[in-house]
Length: 429
Image 1: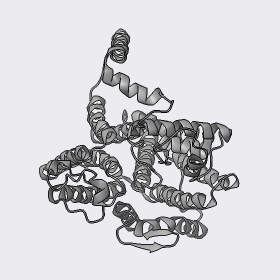
Image 2: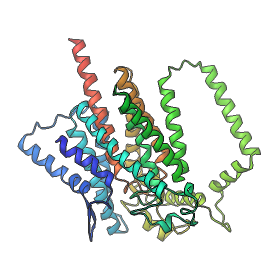
Image 3: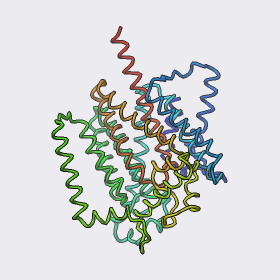
């Protein structure tokens, strides 16, 4: 099934605009077809051979797959209280596609060799999209984007440095978020190859991704890009800091934060955007986003923590919007999208599973080879910065590449768990 997975993984980076067919129910792309076929193939395989898949129940990877399955089942049941059945159905299709991809990659990626082939496929597609974005910036030629919407101030023609890369994405923020995935992928290949030319190529790709993120104007993605390298290099250092120093550093940071809030006007203005809820003559984009979160929390309370139902946040925002949001109704926050849409049980399961993946990788990196430790450092760093990066996109349910990427992370954890357990059994003998 390796060839099948290569097509699945590669095609997701073509989006739903390239090589896709428009139908009344939505866009049918190569990725979506291959993803929807995964479950029937798995069922047929199990019917033919009940031992086709050996699943380790005592595994963080298995637990995370279980979280996704629980999420899907809860979303399915949420039709009972969803206001808009049409929105529920559309989101269920997207969730089914995403969860199917995770399950397929988890079950069919047998070993590290296969996993690395899939990572190379991801690298090819990310590099293709990076070069496409560079082409847009250099030539001011946009094949799929609405330039009128993107070039708000009509400066692209005369001021090249204001051009934004976007490729086939709905907006430049979604494109910038995807480019963050280029950092761990390139670092994985950089640290697992001895070919100097390939190593230089991966370095070039990371520099290009950084420049394109900057050019996109996505503040959070740029901040997370900088955080990525800080965290990654911090993980490479063996820290031996005494508790007294940690206390002193904490006190100093808190003191500086209090002083900034008390005496720095730009910091005060930023905070006011987030805490001021009374009507204002001008509603900034940041304040509108915070109002969406506040509205979402009220919906969460009104549904007694069960969530408004799959895909129903927007209809609730339109119908029960207590605070103004500049006529934007998508909640613009992945974590609140899960909490408000699917309720407290799914949210807790997802957060626990997410934290366990990071915790498990930290534990595994203590007992693996130096190169594998570098791979784990790259994945850990991405998981940490994705916490912030995921709030940049308007709707992560539509950002299909992230399901594939998390499927690869889960598959890697499963492979490493098997490898470490096998080595332990060998030592015990």
